[in-house]
Image (tube, rainbow, N blue to C red):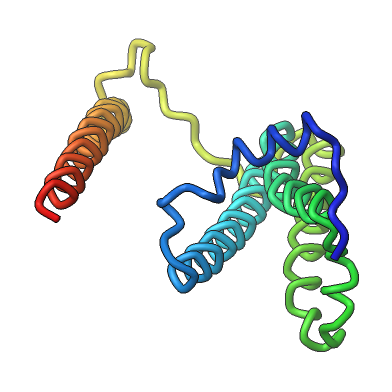
Length: 186
């Protein structure tokens, strides 16, 4: 493994990753954290591909394209980082048999193919494969159940996001205070 060095880029990557941070824990915790980060990125990739297919089937054009790019960003970041650290990802992937890679290849390229095909359908027909009803939430008929449900969902989602933000901040501060108390007790 050879490590490429370009002062500013590598320093920026080191600062961003903060691999010496205590958040990574000991070697076992670091390994599990890295595995879980890889799992999380894989779930994000699959979710982005699935959402791209659904958005394309519903007749949107920009959103599926954005989701396909968003699905690729973690892979691009991984390849860039590994290359900076002297690791050839293609060589690592080449160690795996084609049979073991087949599921991933089918998932990724199948989702991309379905997305582009559904987008092509929309471009040539003027509508998606599935047309959803458009609820009137502000017009004269806005006093219906759909409008109320949509408004309630938006208010509830915003409220839940704010409560989650407060809980995360409070939890983080409590955790830090507990850590400081534990250090003082030792």
